[in-house]
Amino acid sequence: MKFVDEVSIQVTAGNGGHGCLSFHREKFIPLGGPDGGDGGDGGSVYLKGSKDMHTLVDFRYQRLFKAKNGQPGSGCNCTGRSAEDLYIKVPLGTLVYDEETGELLGDVTQHDQILKVAAGGYHGLGNARFKSSTNRSPRKTTPGTLGEVRQLKLELKVLADVGLLGLPNAGKSTLIRSVSAAHPKVADYPFTTLHPYLGVVRVEEEQSFVIADIPGIIEGASEGAGLGIQFLKHIARTVLLLHVVDVVPYDDSDPVASVRVITEELKKFSPELIEKPRWLILNKIDLLPEEERETRCQSIVKELHWTGPVFEISASEKLGLKKLIFAIAKHLFP
Image 1 (cartoon, helix red, strand yellow):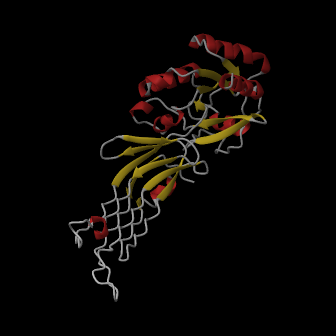
Image 2: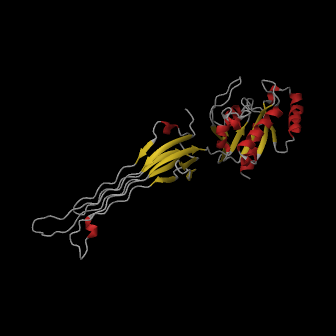
Image 3: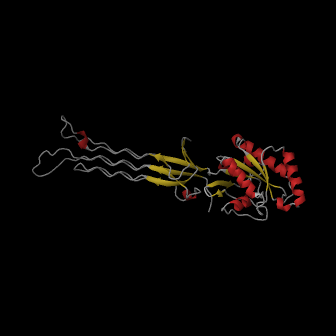
């Protein structure tokens, strides 16, 4: 399924029904008087959070949404039927902007949360409303008002507790596959994830957290190179970042340099993001002889002057993952 995280849509609320101009006409009842009823209200448009949606891809195929109009009033003091409101499902984590003004209208973060984005038109009044002691036969009515029309920009920031950072082929996708039921594509050749994946990691029966894998970041990403930078917003809501590093890169590149590259790109993208807690995850230790693992890992940590938590793992062989998962759970649920 194609991942879509930004889209523009147009929403149109229903118009209010017009008020009715009518006079009661019945045999043996002369001068029956005004009996024009009010119109009905137009339907409003709401966005509704759904935990079953994960992208905005459906909006690529339908971008116009219109609620129904209220019905006009009729004689015998009959009020027109009000139109039903229109509810549009969106994935959790959707930010809603008015595209014309840039105003943030709301943030849909909970299942079944609703956000009104276009108000329906108000009903018009029938002539019965204007009857008075001095005006027994009013011919005045009011039309229903128009429903709001809005051009919206929907922007999805996935909701996750933990975000994975790393260069392409650092092993992020393998890690999320090993600790959750998510199944991003992995390969034994240079390859990068093309869109974010979410995985739920269950620690205990009633304790779990969500981990997000985004496309690998390359040097120059903050200037538009590669895919990773456009998805960095998806880890903006995370509590913890895991910086995954390949200790035995396929191209013999320097793991220390790779960490510094991503750190610089994070600084350029968002000063707030770089301040989040970040743990160093030294991956693929199974590719090193057992007697060399500790020396190699300590060398990387020392050269980086890393002061935060460090974990040595092999995502493919599931070495060190239990220790990492329980440490994350302790950090998230102290």
